[in-house]
Length: 383
Ligand SMILES: NC(=O)C1=CN([C@@H]2O[C@H](COP(=O)(O)OP(=O)(O)OC[C@H]3O[C@@H](n4cnc5c(N)ncnc54)[C@H](OP(=O)(O)O)[C@@H]3O)[C@@H](O)[C@H]2O)C=CC1
Ligand SMILES: CC(=O)[C@@H](O)[C@H](O)COP(=O)(O)O
Ligand SMILES: [Mn+2]
Image (cartoon, rainbow, N blue to C red):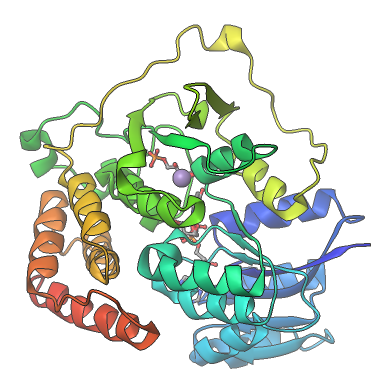
């Protein structure tokens, strides 16, 4: 029986790789829903090839273009944020892959979980913003949230077969990004082009900038906290420039399990979609002789302030990670548009956290308001 998949963000890096996996395994997966924000051309081509029941374009202004591109197909076409939310809860879906970027993933993820649909979660920002509410809802509904993010997939894989409260700590590996080992002086002058040049992974622009600033690792620590029910002190960052060990779990008896392989997101995507099965593929295999040394370092939290900011927000709790995320989305967008410098990003995030209203025990509406307030505050500092 095929698993009917909804891919939210099918035109992005994760979305297109998920479609590659699905294409190789038509006996296991079919596409029920595809969504994108602006990229009508790619969405329409994907729809023609994979014949989903429904496609949605987030930007309503693109609806007519999508409709005419798909005029010869019998595919339902919708537009707008709310339509994405609604399709994420369709009863004909067996799994939602959240591969849209940023805060935009929050509401569709909640709708999917509310509707009792298992989630393969790539969109880490969703858990950074409201991990407490989402994991509580998922537990209540007994719905699996299966990580796609490579580090979290690694931990999830290490935990298979283990029982009880057995995690002493986890070690999230970080490549260190394109600026590993560089000084503050160097970072003052780095360009968008340099920051987008990730040493090991080809990803969307937003996460690539996050990797360069180490905010990605901060967001991943918060993501791990919620996925695996950990305290901040149980989450350690280990810089591993080769990105071969995708993360590790140290158990209460001191034993460490690691998951490793070449950096290829198709593997964690496939693992999440096929879970609990492991399925075959012909992805390139890791060969030890190609990597005579796998190395490990400490992260430089003085140069890469984002990592400390994220840990502080995680420790502070409440709506602080939501503020951090919103400010980060604003500054990354500004950096990509050449409107702020690389180091200013951390400065603006720090100031936004200082100026935002702290809420100790936020409800869902508080998160929406926090996100809006933090975006306003951060944007003011970019003008
Ligand atoms: N890329 C990777 O290897 C990894 C990514 N992740 C996480 O996965 C998520 C996706 O990353 P990635 O694939 O790199 O991102 P991309 O930028 O490549 O793709 C983002 C996708 O989301 C859509 N999208 C963007 N904004 C909106 C919006 N406001 N509303 C609806 N849809 C939107 C885009 O549509 P359009 O093309 O039309 O703009 C596109 O389909 C992120 O949260 C990232 O942190 C995690 C681990 C690895
Ligand atoms: C592929 C993936 O999961 C990314 O989140 C990756 O981890 C980014 O690399 P960094 O370790 O440089 O952040
Ligand atoms: Mn990752």
